Structure formats: C-alpha cells, structure tokens
Length: 90
Image 1 (cartoon, rainbow, N blue to C red):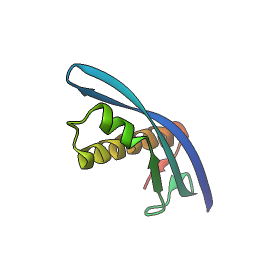
Image 2: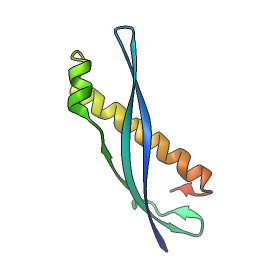
Image 3: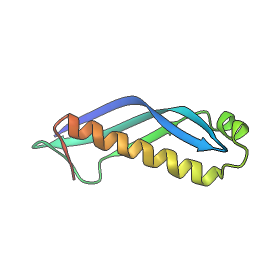
Image 4: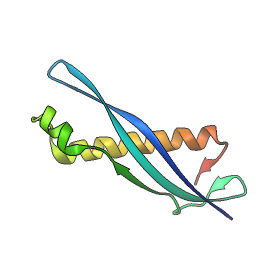
C-alpha cells in the first residue's frame, strides 16, 4: 500500500447575471493505492477558495450551494487526475 498526497488548483466557473467568473480553488487530497486502485474509503480532500470575495462579487449566490458546487468541481477534478494517473477509484 502506498499513500499519495497531492495538491491541485482547479478552476470553478460561476455564471450569474450575465457575468462569468473563474474562481481558483486549491484542492488538497490524499489516498492510498494498492494493486493499481485507490483503496475504498481512503480518499480525503480539502478545498480552499476566497469565499468572501466570491460572495461579495455575487451577492445573490447561496453560500451552501456554492460550497456544494465547489466540492463537486473538486471531486470531478480528482476523478480526472486519478484516471490520467492510471488509478481506478474504489
């Protein structure tokens, strides 16, 4: 078993009131790999972005929905990273 720890910056797009913004999201994640596959239950991730600035620029955004959308963007980016690295997500 090997533990992998990695960081990526992924873009999260927000379109609101005819404006389009790309918010950089720093994603830190770690997981264990064995026999070419990610061991089920070992993947953890943390996201970091300037939520205050985004909410100030887009005041009608729902805070909780924004967090959920950023989390989904981070998970898609990690799935893509794992696929490009040749690992299967367990």
